Length: 132
Length: 275
Image 1 (cartoon, rainbow over the protein chains, first blue to last red):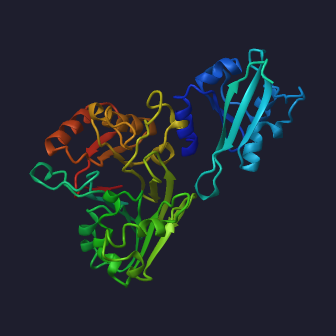
Image 2: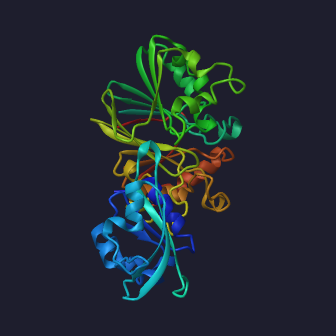
Protein backbone atom coordinates (compact mmCIF):
# COMPACT_ATOMS: atom_id res chain seq x y z
CA UNK A 1 0.00 0.00 0.00
CA UNK A 2 1.33 3.41 -0.93
CA UNK A 3 2.21 5.93 1.74
CA UNK A 4 0.25 9.21 1.99
CA UNK A 5 1.41 11.81 -0.50
CA UNK A 6 2.94 14.02 2.20
CA UNK A 7 5.26 11.20 3.27
CA UNK A 8 6.19 10.39 -0.32
CA UNK A 9 7.08 14.00 -1.02
CA UNK A 10 9.10 14.38 2.18
CA UNK A 11 10.94 11.12 1.55
CA UNK A 12 11.88 12.24 -1.95
CA UNK A 13 12.94 15.65 -0.64
CA UNK A 14 14.98 14.05 2.15
CA UNK A 15 16.69 11.87 -0.42
CA UNK A 16 18.02 15.05 -2.02
CA UNK A 17 19.11 16.79 1.18
CA UNK A 18 22.51 16.78 2.83
CA UNK A 19 20.75 17.37 6.15
CA UNK A 20 20.06 14.17 8.08
CA UNK A 21 16.32 13.43 8.08
CA UNK A 22 14.26 10.76 9.85
CA UNK A 23 10.67 10.08 8.84
CA UNK A 24 7.88 8.33 10.76
CA UNK A 25 4.30 7.56 9.77
CA UNK A 26 1.15 8.33 11.76
CA UNK A 27 1.77 5.38 14.10
CA UNK A 28 5.33 6.48 14.73
CA UNK A 29 6.82 3.68 12.65
CA UNK A 30 10.20 4.60 11.20
CA UNK A 31 9.66 4.48 7.44
CA UNK A 32 12.81 6.19 6.16
CA UNK A 33 15.99 7.98 7.00
CA UNK A 34 18.22 9.48 4.37
CA UNK A 35 21.81 8.91 3.37
CA UNK A 36 22.98 11.92 5.37
CA UNK A 37 21.54 10.34 8.51
CA UNK A 38 23.19 6.97 7.99
CA UNK A 39 26.67 7.71 9.41
CA UNK A 40 25.09 9.32 12.47
CA UNK A 41 22.58 6.54 13.08
CA UNK A 42 25.25 3.98 12.42
CA UNK A 43 23.69 1.86 9.71
CA UNK A 44 22.42 2.20 6.15
CA UNK A 45 18.64 2.45 5.97
CA UNK A 46 18.52 -0.40 3.48
CA UNK A 47 20.07 -2.59 6.16
CA UNK A 48 18.13 -1.21 9.13
CA UNK A 49 14.74 -1.15 7.38
CA UNK A 50 11.46 0.03 8.80
CA UNK A 51 11.13 -0.17 12.58
CA UNK A 52 8.13 -0.09 14.86
CA UNK A 53 7.89 2.88 17.21
CA UNK A 54 8.65 0.73 20.26
CA UNK A 55 11.76 -0.64 18.58
CA UNK A 56 13.49 2.49 17.33
CA UNK A 57 12.75 4.52 20.44
CA UNK A 58 14.39 1.72 22.40
CA UNK A 59 17.31 0.88 20.14
CA UNK A 60 18.59 4.45 19.83
CA UNK A 61 18.51 4.87 23.65
CA UNK A 62 17.68 8.59 23.53
CA UNK A 63 19.01 10.50 26.54
CA UNK A 64 18.56 14.12 27.62
CA UNK A 65 21.32 16.60 28.43
CA UNK A 66 21.39 15.30 31.99
CA UNK A 67 22.10 11.82 30.56
CA UNK A 68 18.69 10.58 31.68
CA UNK A 69 16.94 8.08 29.41
CA UNK A 70 14.06 9.81 27.60
CA UNK A 71 10.79 7.89 27.72
CA UNK A 72 9.54 6.66 24.32
CA UNK A 73 6.57 9.02 24.35
CA UNK A 74 8.87 12.00 25.04
CA UNK A 75 11.35 11.60 22.18
CA UNK A 76 11.08 14.58 19.79
CA UNK A 77 9.19 12.82 16.99
CA UNK A 78 6.70 11.26 19.39
CA UNK A 79 6.08 14.65 21.01
CA UNK A 80 5.66 16.30 17.61
CA UNK A 81 3.12 13.67 16.57
CA UNK A 82 1.21 13.85 19.83
CA UNK A 83 1.18 17.62 20.24
CA UNK A 84 1.08 18.48 16.52
CA UNK A 85 3.68 21.10 17.35
CA UNK A 86 7.34 21.43 16.41
CA UNK A 87 9.93 20.33 18.92
CA UNK A 88 13.57 21.38 19.13
CA UNK A 89 15.87 19.72 21.60
CA UNK A 90 19.42 18.50 22.17
CA UNK A 91 19.69 14.79 22.89
CA UNK A 92 22.24 12.02 22.99
CA UNK A 93 21.67 8.74 21.21
CA UNK A 94 23.40 5.45 20.73
CA UNK A 95 23.83 4.67 17.04
CA UNK A 96 23.12 1.27 15.59
CA UNK A 97 26.89 0.84 15.46
CA UNK A 98 26.99 1.27 19.23
CA UNK A 99 28.61 4.72 19.14
CA UNK A 100 27.24 7.58 21.29
CA UNK A 101 26.37 10.83 19.52
CA UNK A 102 25.12 14.24 20.58
CA UNK A 103 22.42 15.70 18.35
CA UNK A 104 20.41 18.85 17.83
CA UNK A 105 16.97 17.67 16.68
CA UNK A 106 14.12 19.63 15.11
CA UNK A 107 10.99 17.53 14.71
CA UNK A 108 7.73 18.70 13.24
CA UNK A 109 4.38 17.12 12.41
CA UNK A 110 3.28 16.78 8.78
CA UNK A 111 -0.15 18.31 9.23
CA UNK A 112 -2.03 17.67 6.01
CA UNK A 113 -5.34 18.69 4.56
CA UNK A 114 -8.57 17.96 6.41
CA UNK A 115 -6.88 17.53 9.80
CA UNK A 116 -4.98 14.51 8.50
CA UNK A 117 -1.69 13.75 10.24
CA UNK A 118 0.16 11.24 8.07
CA UNK A 119 3.41 11.40 10.03
CA UNK A 120 6.28 13.52 11.26
CA UNK A 121 9.84 14.28 10.27
CA UNK A 122 12.96 15.09 12.26
CA UNK A 123 15.94 16.98 10.90
CA UNK A 124 19.04 16.73 13.01
CA UNK A 125 22.64 17.77 13.25
CA UNK A 126 25.49 16.17 15.11
CA UNK A 127 26.83 18.51 17.79
CA UNK A 128 30.47 18.61 18.79
CA UNK A 129 30.68 17.12 22.28
CA UNK A 130 32.54 20.18 23.59
CA UNK A 131 29.51 22.41 22.77
CA UNK A 132 27.67 23.38 25.92
CA UNK B 1 -19.11 0.73 -17.22
CA UNK B 2 -18.79 2.95 -20.28
CA UNK B 3 -15.98 5.48 -20.66
CA UNK B 4 -15.81 8.15 -23.35
CA UNK B 5 -13.04 10.67 -23.96
CA UNK B 6 -14.28 14.19 -24.76
CA UNK B 7 -10.99 16.04 -24.40
CA UNK B 8 -7.49 14.58 -24.13
CA UNK B 9 -5.18 17.56 -24.66
CA UNK B 10 -3.11 19.07 -21.88
CA UNK B 11 -2.28 22.62 -20.86
CA UNK B 12 -4.24 24.57 -23.48
CA UNK B 13 -6.80 23.83 -26.17
CA UNK B 14 -4.95 23.10 -29.40
CA UNK B 15 -7.25 22.88 -32.41
CA UNK B 16 -5.73 22.85 -35.88
CA UNK B 17 -4.77 20.69 -38.80
CA UNK B 18 -1.94 19.02 -36.85
CA UNK B 19 -4.25 17.79 -34.08
CA UNK B 20 -7.39 16.77 -35.94
CA UNK B 21 -7.30 13.07 -35.08
CA UNK B 22 -6.30 13.17 -31.40
CA UNK B 23 -8.26 16.35 -30.85
CA UNK B 24 -7.51 19.73 -29.37
CA UNK B 25 -9.95 19.91 -26.46
CA UNK B 26 -8.60 19.83 -22.92
CA UNK B 27 -9.39 17.21 -20.30
CA UNK B 28 -12.87 15.79 -20.03
CA UNK B 29 -14.01 12.17 -19.70
CA UNK B 30 -17.52 10.76 -19.33
CA UNK B 31 -18.03 7.66 -17.20
CA UNK B 32 -21.34 5.79 -17.02
CA UNK B 33 -21.29 3.42 -14.08
CA UNK B 34 -24.67 1.78 -13.57
CA UNK B 35 -27.07 4.59 -12.80
CA UNK B 36 -24.28 7.12 -12.20
CA UNK B 37 -23.26 9.70 -14.79
CA UNK B 38 -19.80 10.96 -13.89
CA UNK B 39 -17.85 13.66 -15.68
CA UNK B 40 -14.12 13.80 -15.02
CA UNK B 41 -12.78 17.33 -15.29
CA UNK B 42 -14.22 20.36 -17.03
CA UNK B 43 -11.72 21.14 -19.76
CA UNK B 44 -12.98 22.47 -23.05
CA UNK B 45 -14.19 18.99 -24.03
CA UNK B 46 -17.03 19.35 -21.54
CA UNK B 47 -18.92 21.77 -23.81
CA UNK B 48 -19.76 19.08 -26.34
CA UNK B 49 -20.47 16.56 -23.59
CA UNK B 50 -22.96 19.00 -22.08
CA UNK B 51 -24.68 19.41 -25.43
CA UNK B 52 -25.02 15.63 -25.71
CA UNK B 53 -26.89 15.55 -22.40
CA UNK B 54 -29.90 17.59 -23.54
CA UNK B 55 -32.13 14.55 -23.09
CA UNK B 56 -30.68 13.72 -19.68
CA UNK B 57 -32.63 14.44 -16.53
CA UNK B 58 -31.61 13.83 -12.96
CA UNK B 59 -28.18 13.83 -11.45
CA UNK B 60 -24.76 14.58 -12.92
CA UNK B 61 -21.55 14.40 -10.86
CA UNK B 62 -18.54 16.39 -12.03
CA UNK B 63 -15.27 15.24 -10.46
CA UNK B 64 -12.50 17.81 -10.75
CA UNK B 65 -8.93 16.63 -10.25
CA UNK B 66 -7.66 20.17 -9.67
CA UNK B 67 -8.41 23.71 -10.65
CA UNK B 68 -5.81 24.55 -13.28
CA UNK B 69 -7.47 26.31 -16.19
CA UNK B 70 -7.24 23.44 -18.65
CA UNK B 71 -9.40 21.41 -16.25
CA UNK B 72 -12.06 24.00 -15.42
CA UNK B 73 -12.22 26.30 -18.42
CA UNK B 74 -15.22 24.52 -19.92
CA UNK B 75 -17.34 24.67 -16.78
CA UNK B 76 -19.01 27.95 -17.74
CA UNK B 77 -20.05 26.36 -21.04
CA UNK B 78 -21.44 23.13 -19.57
CA UNK B 79 -25.16 23.26 -20.26
CA UNK B 80 -26.24 21.19 -17.23
CA UNK B 81 -24.79 23.92 -15.00
CA UNK B 82 -27.55 26.21 -16.28
CA UNK B 83 -30.42 23.69 -16.38
CA UNK B 84 -32.38 23.90 -13.16
CA UNK B 85 -33.89 20.42 -13.59
CA UNK B 86 -30.42 18.86 -13.45
CA UNK B 87 -28.94 18.08 -10.05
CA UNK B 88 -25.28 18.93 -10.59
CA UNK B 89 -22.76 17.91 -7.95
CA UNK B 90 -19.23 19.25 -8.34
CA UNK B 91 -16.47 17.51 -6.39
CA UNK B 92 -12.90 18.74 -6.13
CA UNK B 93 -9.97 19.21 -3.79
CA UNK B 94 -9.91 21.99 -1.21
CA UNK B 95 -6.65 23.62 -0.20
CA UNK B 96 -5.43 23.73 3.35
CA UNK B 97 -7.13 27.10 3.83
CA UNK B 98 -9.98 27.34 1.32
CA UNK B 99 -12.82 25.02 0.38
CA UNK B 100 -13.72 24.07 -3.16
CA UNK B 101 -16.38 26.77 -3.50
CA UNK B 102 -14.02 29.56 -2.54
CA UNK B 103 -11.27 28.27 -4.81
CA UNK B 104 -13.51 27.68 -7.80
CA UNK B 105 -15.14 31.09 -7.37
CA UNK B 106 -11.83 32.73 -8.19
CA UNK B 107 -12.27 31.53 -11.76
CA UNK B 108 -16.07 31.70 -12.04
CA UNK B 109 -16.34 35.40 -11.29
CA UNK B 110 -15.44 38.67 -13.03
CA UNK B 111 -13.09 39.65 -14.48
CA UNK B 112 -12.20 36.12 -15.59
CA UNK B 113 -15.79 35.03 -16.29
CA UNK B 114 -19.04 37.01 -16.42
CA UNK B 115 -21.15 34.49 -14.45
CA UNK B 116 -20.51 33.95 -10.77
CA UNK B 117 -20.52 30.46 -9.33
CA UNK B 118 -23.20 31.47 -6.82
CA UNK B 119 -25.47 32.63 -9.64
CA UNK B 120 -25.75 29.13 -11.07
CA UNK B 121 -28.45 28.35 -8.52
CA UNK B 122 -29.32 25.80 -5.86
CA UNK B 123 -29.30 22.89 -8.31
CA UNK B 124 -25.49 23.06 -8.21
CA UNK B 125 -23.87 21.61 -5.08
CA UNK B 126 -20.16 21.69 -4.30
CA UNK B 127 -18.27 19.13 -2.28
CA UNK B 128 -14.71 18.87 -1.06
CA UNK B 129 -13.43 15.44 -2.11
CA UNK B 130 -13.65 13.22 0.99
CA UNK B 131 -10.60 11.39 2.26
CA UNK B 132 -12.57 8.15 2.33
CA UNK B 133 -14.19 6.37 -0.64
CA UNK B 134 -17.72 7.56 -1.34
CA UNK B 135 -20.71 6.33 -3.30
CA UNK B 136 -22.35 8.00 -6.27
CA UNK B 137 -25.24 5.78 -7.31
CA UNK B 138 -23.81 2.43 -8.38
CA UNK B 139 -20.26 3.78 -8.46
CA UNK B 140 -17.68 3.77 -5.68
CA UNK B 141 -15.31 6.69 -6.02
CA UNK B 142 -11.99 7.15 -4.31
CA UNK B 143 -10.10 10.44 -4.58
CA UNK B 144 -6.52 10.66 -3.38
CA UNK B 145 -3.89 13.38 -3.47
CA UNK B 146 -1.18 12.86 -6.09
CA UNK B 147 1.98 14.70 -7.11
CA UNK B 148 1.18 17.79 -9.19
CA UNK B 149 1.55 21.48 -8.36
CA UNK B 150 -1.31 22.77 -6.17
CA UNK B 151 -3.88 20.49 -4.53
CA UNK B 152 -4.60 17.71 -7.01
CA UNK B 153 -6.34 14.38 -6.72
CA UNK B 154 -6.61 11.33 -8.92
CA UNK B 155 -9.73 9.18 -8.99
CA UNK B 156 -10.48 5.48 -8.94
CA UNK B 157 -14.02 4.58 -9.95
CA UNK B 158 -15.48 1.12 -9.63
CA UNK B 159 -18.81 -0.50 -10.27
CA UNK B 160 -19.91 -4.10 -10.66
CA UNK B 161 -18.46 -4.34 -14.17
CA UNK B 162 -15.04 -2.77 -13.87
CA UNK B 163 -12.62 -0.19 -12.54
CA UNK B 164 -11.09 2.89 -14.10
CA UNK B 165 -8.39 5.18 -12.71
CA UNK B 166 -8.00 8.76 -13.89
CA UNK B 167 -4.74 10.62 -13.19
CA UNK B 168 -4.52 13.18 -15.97
CA UNK B 169 -1.89 15.42 -14.36
CA UNK B 170 0.68 13.45 -12.44
CA UNK B 171 4.43 13.43 -11.93
CA UNK B 172 5.11 10.35 -9.80
CA UNK B 173 8.80 10.34 -10.72
CA UNK B 174 9.42 13.77 -9.17
CA UNK B 175 12.33 13.56 -6.76
CA UNK B 176 12.45 9.76 -6.79
CA UNK B 177 16.03 8.46 -6.92
CA UNK B 178 14.94 5.84 -9.45
CA UNK B 179 11.58 5.22 -11.03
CA UNK B 180 9.62 3.21 -10.33
CA UNK B 181 10.74 3.07 -6.72
CA UNK B 182 8.21 0.45 -5.59
CA UNK B 183 4.50 0.65 -4.79
CA UNK B 184 4.88 1.96 -1.24
CA UNK B 185 6.64 5.14 -2.37
CA UNK B 186 4.85 5.79 -5.63
CA UNK B 187 2.26 8.55 -5.76
CA UNK B 188 -1.07 7.29 -7.09
CA UNK B 189 -0.18 3.61 -6.97
CA UNK B 190 -3.18 2.58 -4.87
CA UNK B 191 -5.53 4.40 -7.23
CA UNK B 192 -4.20 2.58 -10.27
CA UNK B 193 -3.40 -0.84 -8.87
CA UNK B 194 -5.05 -3.55 -10.91
CA UNK B 195 -7.56 -1.33 -12.72
CA UNK B 196 -9.04 -2.39 -16.03
CA UNK B 197 -8.39 1.02 -17.55
CA UNK B 198 -5.82 3.64 -16.52
CA UNK B 199 -6.11 7.10 -18.05
CA UNK B 200 -2.79 8.76 -17.27
CA UNK B 201 -0.72 11.82 -17.98
CA UNK B 202 1.77 11.15 -20.81
CA UNK B 203 2.61 14.71 -21.76
CA UNK B 204 6.29 14.54 -22.56
CA UNK B 205 8.83 12.43 -24.35
CA UNK B 206 11.77 11.44 -22.18
CA UNK B 207 13.90 14.10 -23.86
CA UNK B 208 11.31 16.83 -23.23
CA UNK B 209 10.84 15.77 -19.60
CA UNK B 210 14.48 16.41 -18.79
CA UNK B 211 13.87 20.14 -19.25
CA UNK B 212 10.49 20.13 -17.47
CA UNK B 213 11.11 18.33 -14.19
CA UNK B 214 8.74 19.67 -11.55
CA UNK B 215 6.13 20.92 -14.00
CA UNK B 216 3.77 18.22 -12.76
CA UNK B 217 3.66 15.87 -15.73
CA UNK B 218 5.07 12.55 -16.82
CA UNK B 219 7.28 11.34 -19.58
CA UNK B 220 5.85 8.48 -21.58
CA UNK B 221 8.54 6.21 -20.12
CA UNK B 222 7.45 7.13 -16.60
CA UNK B 223 3.81 6.60 -17.53
CA UNK B 224 4.66 3.18 -18.87
CA UNK B 225 6.67 2.23 -15.77
CA UNK B 226 3.86 3.46 -13.51
CA UNK B 227 1.25 1.41 -15.39
CA UNK B 228 3.44 -1.68 -15.43
CA UNK B 229 4.10 -1.50 -11.70
CA UNK B 230 0.38 -1.01 -11.00
CA UNK B 231 -0.54 -4.02 -13.11
CA UNK B 232 -3.25 -2.27 -15.10
CA UNK B 233 -5.17 -3.93 -17.90
CA UNK B 234 -5.09 -1.09 -20.41
CA UNK B 235 -3.26 2.24 -20.45
CA UNK B 236 -4.73 5.28 -22.16
CA UNK B 237 -2.17 8.02 -22.78
CA UNK B 238 -3.68 11.40 -21.94
CA UNK B 239 -2.97 15.09 -21.46
CA UNK B 240 -1.04 15.28 -24.71
CA UNK B 241 1.35 18.17 -25.00
CA UNK B 242 -0.20 20.96 -27.10
CA UNK B 243 2.86 20.98 -29.35
CA UNK B 244 2.54 17.29 -30.23
CA UNK B 245 1.03 16.64 -33.63
CA UNK B 246 -1.02 13.61 -34.58
CA UNK B 247 2.04 12.13 -36.27
CA UNK B 248 4.18 12.60 -33.16
CA UNK B 249 1.52 11.02 -30.95
CA UNK B 250 1.30 8.09 -33.36
CA UNK B 251 5.04 7.59 -33.00
CA UNK B 252 4.86 7.74 -29.19
CA UNK B 253 2.01 5.23 -29.21
CA UNK B 254 3.89 2.88 -31.54
CA UNK B 255 6.91 2.93 -29.24
CA UNK B 256 4.81 2.04 -26.19
CA UNK B 257 2.76 -0.56 -28.02
CA UNK B 258 5.80 -2.71 -28.80
CA UNK B 259 6.72 -3.15 -25.14
CA UNK B 260 5.65 -6.13 -23.06
CA UNK B 261 2.93 -5.13 -20.65
CA UNK B 262 -0.51 -3.60 -20.68
CA UNK B 263 -2.25 -2.74 -23.90
CA UNK B 264 -1.62 0.92 -24.77
CA UNK B 265 -4.23 3.11 -26.41
CA UNK B 266 -3.55 6.67 -27.48
CA UNK B 267 -6.11 9.03 -25.95
CA UNK B 268 -8.15 10.23 -28.91
CA UNK B 269 -11.20 12.44 -28.59
CA UNK B 270 -14.34 10.41 -29.07
CA UNK B 271 -12.84 7.04 -28.10
CA UNK B 272 -15.15 4.86 -26.06
CA UNK B 273 -14.36 1.93 -23.81
CA UNK B 274 -16.76 -0.66 -22.45
CA UNK B 275 -15.55 -2.42 -19.30
